Length: 112
Image (cartoon, rainbow, N blue to C red; front, side, top):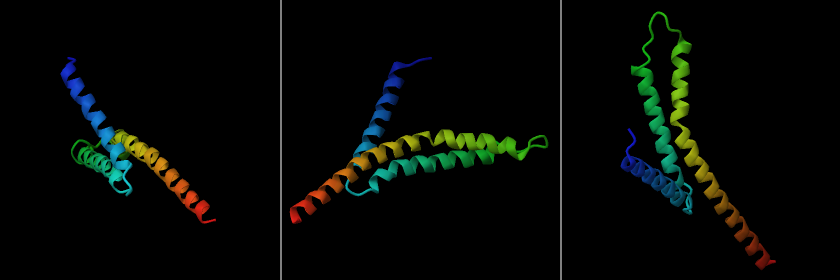
């Protein structure tokens, strides 16, 4: 059943995470912008290994591929937020590196 309050809370949480990622990615140091993608990647590893250990117990009729394919798909699915956050990070850092190059060129123009 659709609950609009839960949908608004989820939307606000997602917007907040994206805004936090933009804020952290625009910092002078590059490391703060990598915190959220690292956390989502570690979360995906925990979920994947947890599922592989407890949910995919092989039986006589299952092959290794029957366990490996769902595990890889689960890992890829849980890394979608990591890829989105890394995309935001790279877009923000590209603007920062372009600004840094322009400043360097301006300094060289003033010296010469």
